[in-house]
Amino acid sequence: MLQYYVEDGCGNVGVCNLLFEVKDCKKPTPYCEDGVVTVLMPSSKSVQIWASDFNLGSFDNCTKKEDLIFSFSSDTTEKSRIFTCDDLGSSSVQMWVTDEAGNQDYCEVFIDIQDNNDVCGNGASVNIGGRVSSINRQIGIEGVEVNVIDSNGVATMHPTLTNGSFLFKNMSKGQDYIIAPSKDDDPLNGVNTRDLVAIQQHLLGKRVFTEPYQYIAADVNNNRKVSSGDILALRKLILGKVSGFGAFDNKSWRFVDQSFTFVDPLYPWPFKERIEYEKIASSKMKTNFNGIKIGDLTGDVNLLGNTPRGKGAPLHLYAPNQILEEGDIYSMSLKTRDKGTIAGLQLSLKFDPKYFEFVEFKSGLLELDPSSFGMKSLRDGVVLLSWSNAVGVEMSSEDLVTLVFKVRSKCSSAEVLHLTQKFLSAEAYTPALEVRKVDLTFGGQEVALLQNTPNPFKKQTTIGFVLPREMPVTLTVYNMNGKVLYVKNLVAFGGYNHVDIRNEELDGAGVFYYELTGVDFTKTRKMILIR
Picture 1: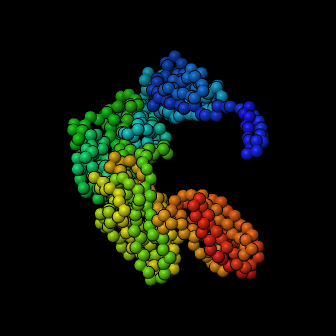
Picture 2: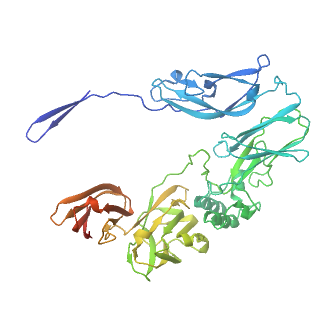
Picture 3: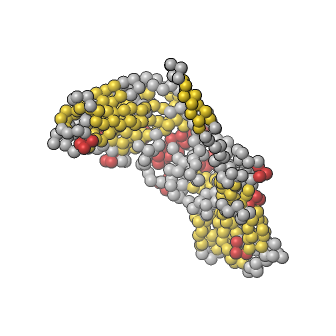
């Protein structure tokens, strides 16, 4: 029990008792072996596996390691399983960890059941299986199309499972087989402007590649070398000027036989992308490949929904907010008051084509050329920007870049312009390849309360306002007598925000005042409701 004492200025004391219970609500942290390979016992044609066999140091905040319970499901009694001939090959299982409070979590692993002694009676056939995994994090790659081609040219395809495993059962003994994986989807997975910085730094000798897989990933245009041509090709992909790596006679993923030894790790070409078995006499369950995501030099590829990112201070951009008339030319100069050096910047700017027509861009502190901008989606009101510099640029009060628009209809620039994550994540990158999230606000450090639209109104009106950063604000509407009719408290975004108000939320027709208040400001305007 907790006991609170509160005393006022006159010496009066109040007491409040609070009963509480301390509970362990935190899930344990599971750590699993990468996988287990085992064989069926000749006597039973089966093998028993315990969930604890997969444990690699799981722990909990309150329960001792030796008191944790390991199971194959949320049912803690399922501590083991029997695997038989029906389970030959690789399959995915879950290792569940349960603490003394009943909290549970799990990790997914794979188990490879082999029949080396032919106890299942498949003497005339063999199995071919293995795993396709990533280089950087050794995570299985799902959905890889693994093709097995026999000596007659007949091909069979199986996609890899969640853990990257694959299995071809009952293949003919004595036959020749070629195993070749392929994956050419989602070209932008793991690819962004940070990778351009990494390639530029390598070419300038500032951060030279040391692994053969880095060279393969950087060879975007597939000409067996890393050059400025790969930077141009990758930037085209990032900006949507090409739809995939097929434009460069390449694929989104390349695969290397895991047992392959590079003669020269700094010049990995040619490398072995298939595994061949001649007159196969026994099952081959270690047909393993390493997958390389082309264009991903920084390990961003998302395989399990948890893309790793570096962490840096956000970069805050701002631009002038203006009320614009039809025919005006609006120069949107992006500035920042933040300090530090950036070596890369990417963003996608969305504008409303009903109000704006894009005219041109102008370089500022960032030196840009037409290859830095993506214009393919201009009709939809989207401009993409990708800039990189291996050395980096020190931030200052100068304009970073200016985008020029012709105004088609009266508007507020803050109402029709904003960053969108749909095409490119708004990010900046330091020379150390840290990621800085980017946001955009309008109006510098000033708060702007906009005139409601429409005004006068009958059924509903919209009150817009612009803030320099995210902050709590209160919007209040009151009548000519000062009676408060409407109050809305919210944490508003940096940039443009709006609140819709219906006529039934106010008291009759007439003139009303609406007021926006924050920690250090108050802004007021009038609006008219008619019946």
